[in-house]
Image (cartoon, rainbow, N blue to C red; front, side, top):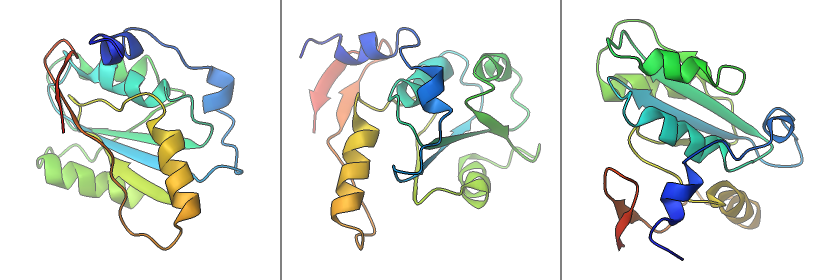
Length: 156
């Protein structure tokens, strides 16, 4: 794995729209919630880290309340794949996550901050773990510390 592993993964859309839009019930539905506020520098890469999973049963909810930057325009580029939600009150990150949780309909629910990334195949690995361990309450994986250019600095 090169140090540009994540950087390459989120550099451009790599997903197949037909796969993302298929909502294939043979796979557990994964709901991803991203709270976002003034994240125009990072939000597209975060979106691509979700969509580039090319996972066939994902519900992606981005909660962005009254952001004054261009985040909403970036999010709208992916409008058919992303639900832009929010109640317009901007009560902070925790409130945004809770708002998204109330909207989520997945068997698996997770959240990803607007300046963080999922690694390739994360959703398939999560679905596999969930299928093999249906009574487990929490799943987690490895953590990469990345810089502002999505280059891995450390693995935990």
